[in-house]
Length: 345
Image (tube, rainbow, N blue to C red; front, side, top):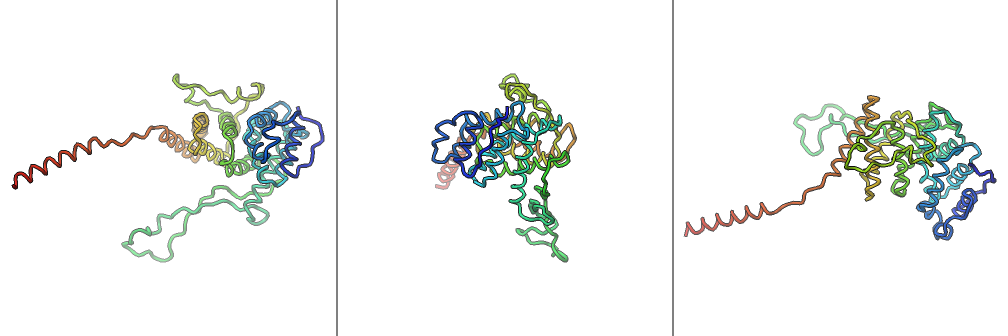
């Protein structure tokens, strides 16, 4: 249940630790409280993370008087980059629980305040796009109508060369001060894009939480669980706090689906050596694929199918090169050369 104690002002990582200890109802582990870099210790400490995510998943979380949401809001707004990373670590659980409960229209003023603060920060990082909007993120793609720079064109191009094609990775971010159903996917998607930009700093447990909620959001079963010789991963609903709340299937428009796939791709194909993370990411990718197949969403189908194929390529062992055949061929060539020389002599 939320703690009714008045929130303490947060101006530094030390203030954040003191406030969090009061909210959790006990002193933080010594490895965190006495650390030289308390924000980094807070980011990577498994016990504190488990306590915070347990509270975020618990009954009554996300309400307007939830002091943990107030702490996340104040800690991020303090402007300490290391402390902001520690707050972003809980975005998977924050967004996951919020989206699942939003389907049933439960009031979640605490969650919405934190998400809107993260959204405003993401918009401020983009820069101005006119009329108070944050600029869109785009990438230029080569236009095949242009001659290749590596070859001489047989026919000289007429007039101006064709312009580059511009693909929009993320549309402009409009300023939003409230959370409405029509804005929900865009706001949460922008927050996930912010989280994706810091994935290299996130611990594996945070990425595991995200993949778990992807399975729940998709609402489709994974064929990976059907293999008799493969261990079944825990179901998303059973992994929730005590299994008391079942995480629901949610709408997945492209503006939310795209950052989800990018994060899953990092978990699956990134530098992490965790087999458990890669297995959970593969399961999330397949569930998202079957969800896209069910809704006949062409861009989502193409993205998830490509991701699944890439994951299969990574899993296939690369055969070691064999030089035995080359050695035998060289020996045969040397024997032929010796016979030719003997014949000439």
